[in-house]
Structures are given as structure tokens and as C-alpha cells.
Length: 261
Image (cartoon, rainbow, N blue to C red; front, top):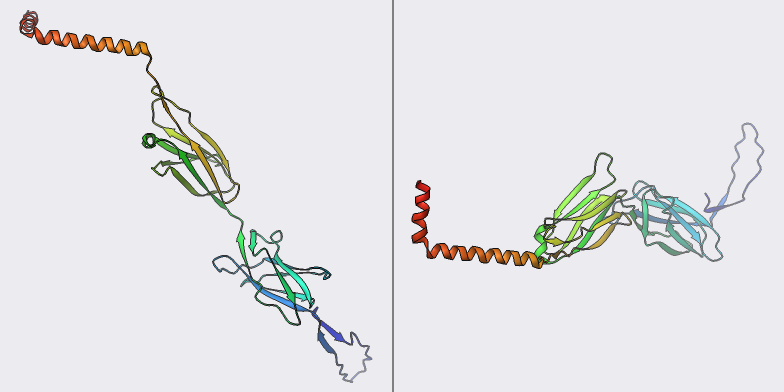
């Protein structure tokens, strides 16, 4: 009854046994209500969300309402001819991250205000990990992406994926409260290439995290003495082959003679 003023505000009565007394009061409406609805982005009604109406300027008032099972709410006791800021109290509502719009300014007239609606966004329970690998085309087939969940109680969970030509990757809906290590795995031989395996630590800070990783193997150069030794060996083999080919008519009978003996 906070929206009505009664005249008289009170009246004294003398109660006499067997006597019926009729008392008249005149009600005059002095305040009005704000009506609205709370839903999610897909239109699902949201109950138990706290909405606040705060007076602006010289209108010093604060009133609250709570959304019902169908998301509807009513805030009572708003003074007419008074600018009112209506907003969702995310600090008093469970699992509400933000609302759209953040607030609405209404001007209360000599009537109720309707359709003051809000869309709310819940606190995320998962987040996405995305990334880009800076790598040459020739090394893509030999490279894998490894994501390790470091927060699991019973052993670490490992996610492995192959790299494609886009060089982009995504791990959707990862546990929000967990810590992760992102690294690359290469089948390149360390004896032939110089490379460093990148290692990135990740922890959720919002609905997603993106990281860029550079992987640039360098082919090792062969020492000059190994090249020279290999060249001499190759030349010796070629010369020996030529000698055997030119003298096979003489050498073959000799070899057969020794084998038979």
C-alpha cells in the first residue's frame, strides 16, 4: 500500500457491543510502479534477478524488485515527475555477469511505466582457446599441437590436434577454473634441425584466450670435413666400380678360381 495515501490517515473508534460502525477512507494514489521482464538473449525468462530503481537529481529514493518465475518484475513506490534510473543489480543476483542495457532512465508520470525489459548474460563456466602458428608450409605435416590440462585431480588430460594450412586452431568450452599448457610437438630430427619447442601457459581471463606461436626450425649445415670425407669416399667407390667394370673379364675367372678352391 506504499503507493496510496489515505484520508483520514487514522480514526479513533469506540467499540460498543452489538453496534456496527462504518468508516470511510479516501485513497489517493501518490506513487506508481515500474513493470518489466528479465530474459536471456534467446528469450528464456530469468527468475530471482534483483532490479533497482534509483532516483536521480532531487529524487532521493531507492526501491528494489525481484523477478518472478516468468522473469516478470514490479518495482513499487516510484514518485511521479521524477527521473528514475532502473538497472539490474549483478552483485545481488546469482550468476549474472552483466545486463543489456546496463540501465534505463524513465520519467515517472501519473501512471505506471511498463516494458522496462532487460537481457542478462550469465557468468561463463567455460572459455575457448584459439591460436595461430607462424610456421613454414614444409613443416606443417610434421607438427602437432598439444594442449595439457594442468588442473585435473587424477592425471593430466592431453588434447592433441594436427595443424592444417590455415595455421589456426581452437579448443572450445574448456574448464574456466583450470590452467593449461599449450605446446608444439615436431617429428623433425634434432640432428638435422635446430628448433625450440614453444611452451605457453594459459589461464582463463574472459570468454576466450588467443595466443600466437612462432615455430621456425633451421636446417643444420654439414661441417666441411664431413663433406670432404664423403666426397673422397664417393670418388673411391666410383673409381673402384669403373676398374671392376673394365677388367671384369680378367677378375671374374680369378675370383671364381679362389671360390672353387
